[in-house]
Amino acid sequence: MRSSTLLATAAALASTVSAQGGSGRVTAQYTDASTGITFQSFTTPAGYRFGLVLPPATDPSKDLIIHLTSPLNSAGAGWAGIDFGRSMVGPLMLVAWPSGSTSSPVTMAPRVARGYKPSDTTPYTASAITLTPIAPGTFVNSTHLAATFVCAGCINSDSFDPATSGTGSFAYAYSLVAVATPGDANSRLSDHTSQGEGYGSFGVDLASARSADFAAYVKLAQAATTTAGGGESGPTPTAGAGPAETSAPASGSGGHGGGEEVDMEYNKMGSGAVAALALVGVWYVLQALSVV
Ligand SMILES: *[C@@H]1O[C@H](CO)[C@@H](O)[C@H](O)[C@H]1NC(C)=O
Image (cartoon, rainbow, N blue to C red; front, side, top):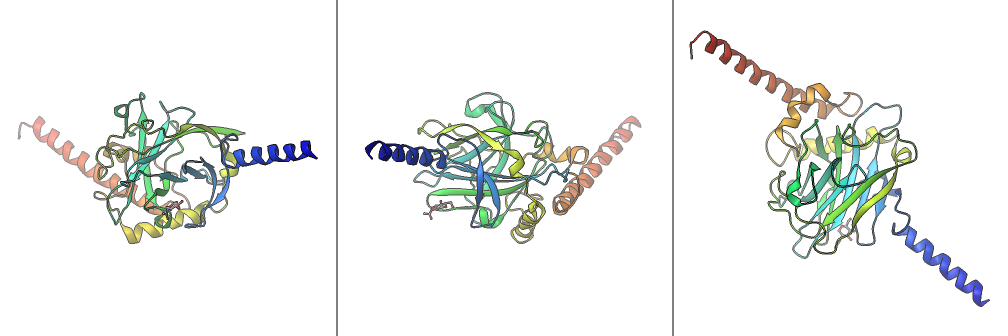
C-alpha cells in the first residue's frame, strides 16, 4: 500500500515535469487559441513558448510559420528569441520585442550572433527573409509578448534542413530587459541572462511540424497585411535590413501557393533595384564620355 502510493506519486511527478518541458525538452503538438494554428511547440515553466509549422513534404517552400510567447518585465519590456541551431553563435535566429507602436505592436527581426555579447548579435542579411505578422497571434499584454509570423525564406543554409530525420536542435532565449531602441528593427539586443532568465537547446520534431494546413495558415498573414499595412518603416513589413531584399530575386522564395503577396513585394523591390542599377549605369556612361 505504502510503496504503491510512493510509486504513484513518483510517476505523477515525472509526468508533471515532462509536461512542463523541463525534462523532455522536445516539442509537442499545441493549438493556439488566438489563431487556431496547430504548432509543434516547446514551453518552459517561466512562460516562454516556441511554436513551428513547416510546409508539407511535397511543398518545396522555404517558408515557415513561427510563434513566440515570452514574459515581459513590469514595464512591459523584454524580448523573445529562437535560434535555428543548437547554440547561439552561428545559425539564423529570430527575435521579437514590443515595438511601442499600436498599429504594429511587435517587431520581429532576423539576427545572427558572432559571439555572446549583445553587441555580437547583428541584423541577418546573408539571404532574403521577409517576416509578415499573423495579427490575432501578435500582441503585447500586461505580462507577455506574443508573436506569430510567416517567415518567407527562413529555411536556408544558415538555419536547418527540414528533411532531417528524427529531432532537430534549436535553442531558445528570452530577456526581461528592454532592447536598446524598441522602435528600431535594427536595435541592439539586451543581455538575456542578467535577470536569471532561462535559455538552452531543445529537440524539434520536424516531421510533425509539417502541416497540410500550411498554405491556409499563410493566408492568415496576408489578410493581416492588407488591413494592417507594413507599419514600421516604408514599403515592406520586412524587419531585416535593406541588403537582404536586394538579394531576393536570386534566392527568393519559390513562388507557389500562398506566397503570392510576399512574392509581389519581392518583385517591387526587384524593379526598384533594377531602376537604381540603370541610373548607376547611365552615370558611368556619362562619366566615361566626360559629360559629368
Ligand atoms: C498575456 O498573453 C499571454 C499569451 O497568450 C497569456 O499567457 C497571459 O495569460 C496573458 N496575460 C494576461 C494578463 O492576460
